Image 1 (cartoon, rainbow, N blue to C red):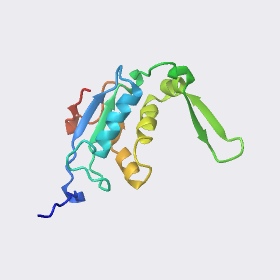
Image 2: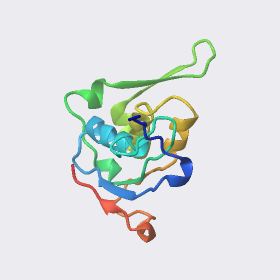
Image 3: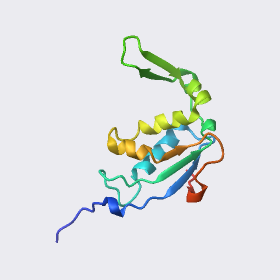
Length: 144
């Protein structure tokens, strides 16, 4: 008897809408959960080269928590490509100005660095407050 490996097709992908409340949650632990859902890793039909993840809506991104002294010590670097073009921003600075960017950075660094990862990241919607624009999709609230 031959054993066949299941390979999902693009046409057979079924997506759900999931809602996470980030209030009081640790940044890294939440980012791991979101990255798994975006990639579809927890689905039985996971296929590495097919984009079969779910849509994820995150609210209360401004109330996210970090452990230890990361608020003051963790630094994010960007470089323009020119000599002396390095920029440093502390985690607390990003959290105060654009908290949604902080979660997007954390999740994007956990996704594949190719076209597939960029497509998966487009299904993540982050909001700083309690409300979101996706009530019509009726997302399921996930507790972890």
